[in-house]
Amino acid sequence: MTRFEPQLLTAHNPGPMTGPGNNTYLLIGGEGSAGLIDAGVGESAHLEELTWTLDARSARLERVLVTHGHRDHAGGAPAIAAAFPEAVFTKYPWPEEDAQYGVAWRSAGDGDVIVAAEEPLTALHTPGHSPDHMAFWHRPSGTIFTGDLVAQGSSVMIHWSRGGDLAQYLASLERLLTLAPRRLLPAHGPAIDDPRTVLLGYLEHRRQRERQVLDALRAGHDTVQAIAESIYDGLAPALMPAARENVRAHLEKLRTDGRAANEDGRWTL
Image (cartoon, rainbow, N blue to C red; front, side):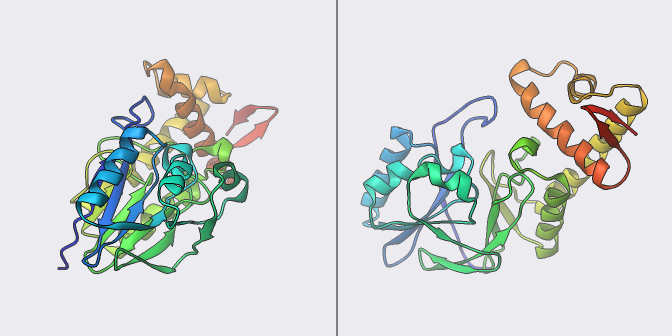
């Protein structure tokens, strides 16, 4: 097994949706070439830690790979670009989202092999959480940088109103399973050293949530709000918007599957 030890740099953005804050991962090669997975949000503490680490290792930041265009992953791109003008910023295209950051994005597609810090990373288009979501697979070590696909001990919001798609998300999880990775490095929470168990658990969680949505419909709850309140009873108010997004994503999948219908915002089996 190839020794592969990315350095975790927190983005310093704790909150209800980000937990302790986003993870970004710094790779430094033997010749001083460096790459960063995800850009954080532009917090000065993140930029200072990145700069200090590169200086301490006599390294130069050459590439930033962004898993997707949500602000907690891409919002720091302008500050990093200003500090490291030679760095190349790469992601899967989402033009209407990407334009807000004002950096010159280089497009990556599914299956592209991108060299960062002298290491080959295979770009995997893994939509569902967002339409542009990518994971980056370091085949030699069996490591996948998973962005917002999974988070140890938590679940992931399927942001339906901004291009999220539950069926695609489930397919993305299944795809990671087929690769049999040894380690997952997520954008939130600790590293995952038992990927198969976590991925299977995520799939079962979604199947369970679908059953709950169906039960809520059978009980007469016919709006996203009512279904979310019945399923997520007692959830902190700050998290309820995410709960509604998840419920809507499940309902849309059920509609595509021919198991639910929507008329003027009222959902039925």
